[in-house]
Image 1: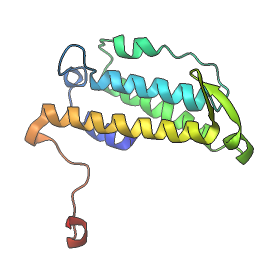
Image 2: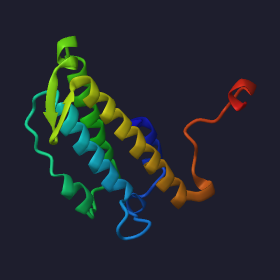
Image 3: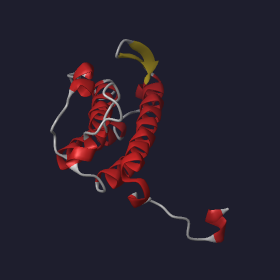
Image 4: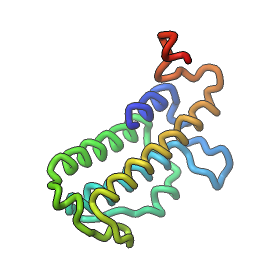
Length: 150
């Protein structure tokens, strides 16, 4: 999913990344900050036992201007750290009960919830990109065979 986000951001300007459809709605940048916070809290901290330093309200309150390339770097860093944590988890850790963000869960449930959350916001970022770019939006994947087009 982070590759799809990168694909969108590479088509947008810094200004477009911070654009909001309406004032109370989130920008793509806010969604990226939110994804970084969620991955850090649920995977890196919750399962990897790193300190939980998340400031969730700030993820949505931020108005920038954090440049697009810096946002991509932050997302890549969070995903890379989460991948490292996931690679160390034992079957016992996956089944163990833990408390993350006030929720009682297991390691496996935390992973599934985090992945679903990430994918949902990825689709939102794609939609916000398409809203701004219109017909200029370049799709990440285009069917190339009859089987793929059906």
